[in-house]
Amino acid sequence: MDRFEYIEARLFEGENYIKRDKNVKIYDGDDKTQFVDGEVVLTTHRILWGKPGDIPKGLVCLSLHLFYIFCIEEESGGMFGLGGPKRIILHLGPTIPGKRPGPAVVSPYHFVKFSFKDGIDTAFYKALNEAVSAKAWEKPQQVTASVDLSPSSLTPRPSVAPVNSKIRSGIVGIERSIEEQHRATDQSISVAFQDLKKLMEKAKEMVTISKTISSKIREKQGDISEDDTVRFKSYLMSLGIDDPVTRDAFRSDSEYYMGLAQQISDMMVAVLIECGGIMSLADVWCRVNRARGLELISPEDLLNACKLLQTIDAPMSLRKFPSGACVLQLNSNRDEEIAKSTSQLLEENGFLTPVKLSQIANVSVLLARERLYTTERLGLACRDESIEGLAFYPNLFLKKV
Amino acid sequence: MAEISWPWQYNFPPFFTIQPHSETRAKQLEAWQQLIAEYMKASKKSTIDIRESQNSPLFHNASINRKLSSEALLTILEDMAKTGRAAPIDKSKNIWEVYWHSLDEWGNMIYSWASNNGLNNSVCTLFELQEGDNTVGEEFHGLDMNILVKALKTLEVKGKCELMEFDDSQGVKFF
Image 1 (cartoon, rainbow over the protein chains, first blue to last red):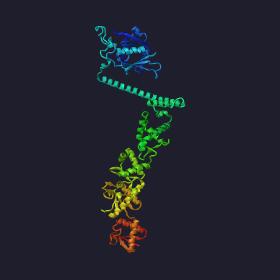
Image 2 (cartoon, rainbow over the protein chains, first blue to last red; image 1 turned 45 degrees about the vertical axis):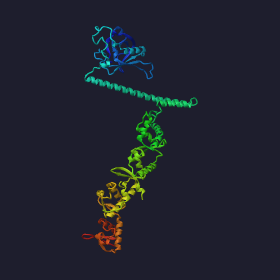
Image 3 (cartoon, each protein chain N blue to C red; image 1 turned 135 degrees about the vertical axis):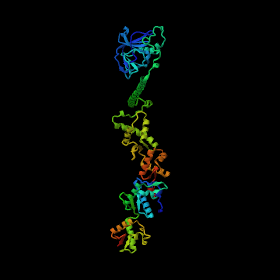
Image 4 (tube, rainbow over the protein chains, first blue to last red; image 1 turned 90 degrees about the vertical axis):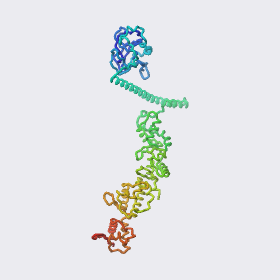
């Protein structure tokens, strides 16, 4: 808003009238201003705004030089663009020193909006774009220089482009430029997040749509061939939406956890078999979230879901070792088996530390330690604590004699 | 220093850590008790000072670099005390007497020796029992005086002997 200046509504030398429009409101950035229901006149150099009838009479009105404008965009009205765009957003360059007084001395925004009550006249919008890109003010003026060398008032054209004329000095200048940078980053961040939110909302919508469609397909099984169903599903998959179980989709938490537990059990069976039947919960969490891609779950949710694994008859269960370590374990993977295989390894190696076992059996040190403890609990190993650390030996106490 | 044949456990590092598994621990403690008794017997010692235990090769196997910690030793000795094979002498449980025979067994051993040598109804000094020529070759020869007295006291309770005090030494009369 601080780029506007008060001036009598007269054309400069070499300035030409282009177009006009009525019922126009001005916004300073996102804020409303007192300037409503006015008339707008577009010239080759400026945009003039005045109360209806003021401009033709040549009374004082608001004027914005076109050289401030470096970007023009339309703002859509509703979410689905109902009724067409109503506002034009003008992004403005920094204020040029020596400007005439205007309605505002400073403004926090670097853009203004013109709101058209009756929708944007496409011809006006086009003309504005053309006028800005034509840069009539940069063209040498046909009139002889002698007339208008008097500065400021009559020459709308500064000698340099607005972007290059950032003549700011002193601490205030530095502070302002820093502030400006902050604002720009802030804005871009908030815009980015808005997009993300919209994306998530849309994703949910898509899931519901896909669900309704697939249920319809199921109803009309005769009419639509199996192929179509499969193809439709593959489309959805390619969109990246594979019906993730999300929290909002369920009414109560326990239902959510049940669903999650089912998902975990389906997913982890193969992984667990591959890893020797046991996996620490931290690793499980990573695996699950990597598989989900979006809609990540928290460690707490995972823990709660894993606690429910037994209630849904999953082939695996959550196991808490006496040391406090939590693991996901296949039900077929019993302690006796672990102890047996570990004691075999003990026989082969003479003795084992958790680190050594973790290298041999290719499991984490934490799990290796738990395996050794389990073996010890079943009397198949005995421990040796010394300054060298904890090691386990075959249980000769019970074996010999 | 006494030379005994060390059991296989002595060179087995876990032997020097008290095992948490109950069954294993029972075996381990048993092995330790046998080893301690054997060692004490061979070295003719009857007391163990826990604070100095680690200087003894019994509790410190330098070849495998393992030591039995004081706490572990205390556990073993307390377990021995349950079966009457050891007893603490001081209240802080630092010094322990170890009996490779129980006091009862010692008493019976002395009594049968006395009976065999026709010493019933006669008096002999404790020094005679401990160091006398007659007892050479007996197991209680050179036995610690405190233990000897305790063993005789068990006999006294059964009415098989009576301890008596002389001016500067103690004697015993067998019945």
